Image 1 (tube, rainbow, N blue to C red):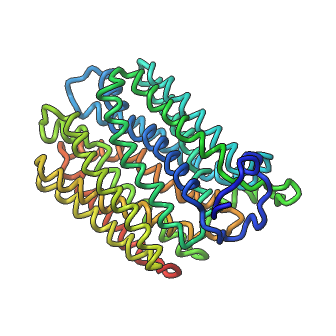
Image 2: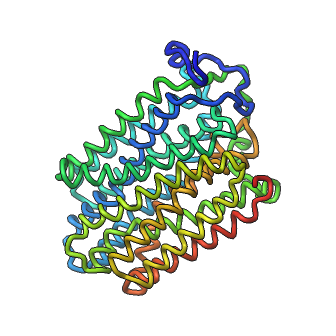
Image 3: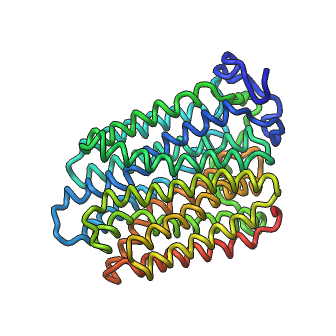
Length: 430
């Protein structure tokens, strides 16, 4: 049997794996990585296509307003509500999956359940004709997204050795860029109606996550080995003291800041093209900018992730990647033209692709306790999903306050530079 491979029967049954809470040492194989990457492709397509295009247009169609700031604010409020839900669901799901003793494994039931909830919510979102319905089903979709990704991310710490995590995390990150452009192409060329667009990304989500969910190895936690905790101890476990675990705290802070910066620079991009540049072909140009962004994210995620494994250096890569995103945001702020936006898209993709891959690997190396990997990574995941959900609301407020997009992109740059300074404080990982 090849390295990292499993027989189908043992994979599906979730047979108990020795050393459940020890650091893995056996490298995962190409088949595992391919299915893992395919799952993330479906996830990013289903989450980012609505954020970038379907949801803003759906909100705008319901408002029937001639004042474009109203659309930005409404979109921001809906995203903000979903972000609050993510704040709760991410760590809770991770903690519950740590303690799940299903015969199918610890992570698999949550991956399957989250996928189905995410997909069903997207389909129902596609038929909504009121802002209340849009807000409710988008929040429900984000809950499904959080349940799915909290458990899926934990498989990296469960199964991937430290010296392979940069490369594997690159295959979590690179599909994000491909998912955005593929989703945008699908809903602007093949599935052009509101409902068919949501249905297309929902179906793709299920089809792409299902193979990994069925075939991945997933250790069974025997009921006898599940630690007994009181409700108070369970709740208290969600607080990780930055004084006791400073590197976890600095990594989390850096991730929050950089993801806020990136989200501020990207989630209102359609509105920037439409109203900031008065672009008559904003939807088509959004696809072009996203394509540029995608190419650089893929190159950086895969290249930097593997290189950080080889050099055994995470912190330096994350510092440079964060600062590069700040420079890209300043270009958008002070050179408001489409050619400059293309240059910024390339720089932003280069910085964010490197950040996504290497920072994910860094996060797995500063976890306080191997027994609570799912919960701790769930807390880390808050720093990815919540900024993405709350940034439209914050961005809308900034745009409304200043009457334009310059302040938005300056704020994006400040967040990115602050994130670079935060990660520089990590001591236990190079």
